[in-house]
Image (cartoon, rainbow, N blue to C red):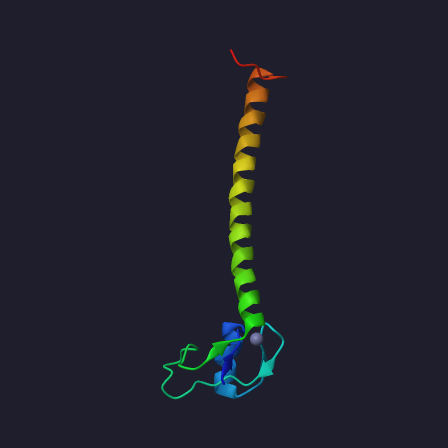
Length: 99
Ligand SMILES: [Zn+2]
């Protein structure tokens, strides 16, 4: 049974030409190859994805999403801090009160 692993795209591209060994996300070392008839796709019939690689790949996606959310929140915090600083400078607000 063929097991597919995730590895950095650039390393795969280089190794497909050079035939060098690369390291998958799971740590497995292998020489990547394209099967005839696969069209360059990893999801050829009968192939399975390494569970550890798949978990790490999903985790990388989750991490990217979390970093994107963090960046959005950091921008909102900066905007809010700037607005409050402007308000304090202009109006000398100590404690805001709703009127
Ligand atoms: Zn793997």
